[in-house]
Image (tube, rainbow, N blue to C red; front, side):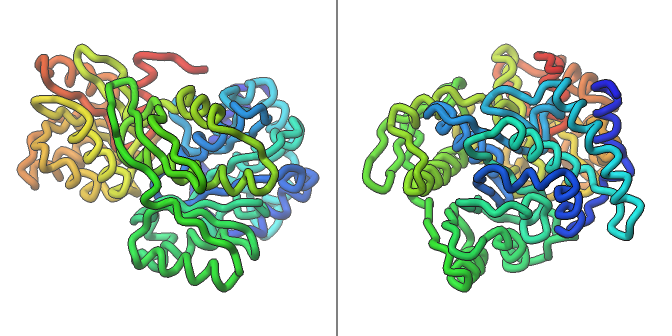
Length: 430
């Protein structure tokens, strides 16, 4: 098996339908030697900010000298982004070797009533094997969908985190915030500290109840950040109030007040980790934040014209993005290059940008799961929004650049895969 064949195996379309539950991943990991038991972990759930919070925690711990495994999803340009040691992505050779090991075991399980491991479960197993083989000091793991029945919840973390909860995946998680929060709170373990970001009261009530039932200490990271104090296209500065310190004028190369909230959650998790023996200081915090590499999140690809990408793919993320665009970027007209997956709340995403009177250029990622550009165009026309449609991100972005004037903003969003394909046009990642 070569690298291309390994990727084709991982990305087989037949395994993309979610099949929530822990029994299949438990059996699969047992066949692989239970690698999830070989390292301590932090498990982060939520609707928005999971990946950014995970990356911030990892970056500070890496700056502190620890070997840190990082599992996030989805990927922006390369599948290898999902599994990393610090900023070092899993190599094509290591990925191929581990997938070769998994193939016969996956087939063995697939022949039982449990069924074949899903796309996401294969990624989880790949990451946990890689972290175990590399003897990481700790792994920072982003939950996939929900939490209670998500494959990552096979872990017994030493700290849990829950970022902002909103509506997404309602088909699987429930139609109310209480139901969704119940699924997210399913990662909370007896006696294990849980850090919680800003929440709607309905969601916070559920998290608090579950934490109390399990006697899990709960730490609230809300209202611990002040800012932005200053910002540019390169990033922003802000203050964070720690348990015992005020950290002044921290810098992260990310924009948006939501990233300050994510930084507050990361700091709170790091403080709990310090209680558990993981040592870090203010210099590590500053360097970890300042040297953060987390592309595709309100990332500026070009300043002339101003081209920005972001992977916001649900209304909660779109709200944070729209607010950040309005507050952090100066522009005359918004040209929104928009592509969404068919299972997402397209109208819920679009409505967040309506106050900016955008020109929408509808497009689709090449993943095969996208809403067609003509469907997006028809929906825009029904709302009286000017819209053109193009079959690929390349042609849509080309059109946006053609019609953009000097003071316009081209924002590519709606899907991490759309953002990734736009980034591919500027930077190549293997």
